[in-house]
Length: 45
Image (cartoon, rainbow, N blue to C red; front, side):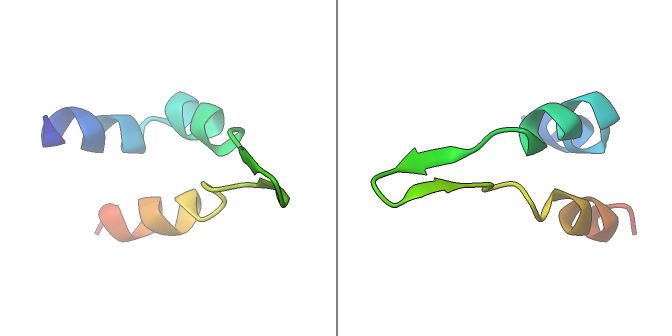
């Protein structure tokens, strides 16, 4: 399962799709995946 998750995190199309997602609550919305590039950079090492 982790192989699939890590492969998705390395795929540009998935990162673009996931980065466009927002969390909406009573305080407004938040881009919960705005740090995806930092995560991706640390995983490629």
